[in-house]
Length: 189
Image 1 (cartoon, rainbow, N blue to C red):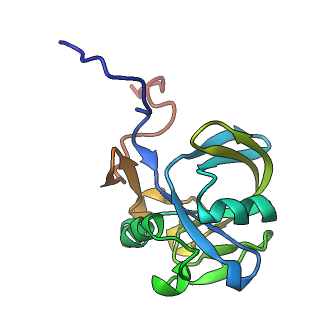
Image 2: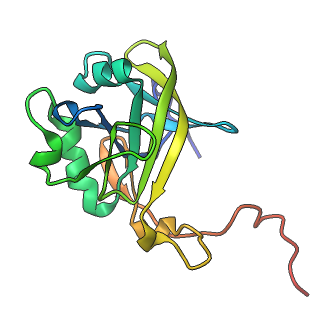
């Protein structure tokens, strides 16, 4: 086995693909596609998104202090890619991609109705890091599409046909390999 030494860079892949919706008024609604996002705390529930300050959504989120993280599925992959390439300063991305903006249950920012999971967030801190600023946010509401819930209430993430991002490419996910703790579970005799 041999290894090749590369210059320092972000190699933590695959990364989630999310569409972050923002804006408190319909005229300001926008969508930015982000891959620099992640869970940072479970109690209280918090996550982070990182955005370049020159992006149109940056100012909207900074001023409103809120946004919604919308998970991306295979059906939404083309819209997510498009929303990551086009600027909301020039057009309404919801209208252009026929996506439905519904006001959040807690925040004024819109959810993307077509997304299976909408995570409503309120910014608690903005940390300048270099090329991106990190928005730390408290999760204040979560909406789940009922078609992905079992009768028991269990969320079936695998049924959403989720996608991820790695080195400029989108990949499908969904195969369940096992559950947390499977490696130490006692086997039945």
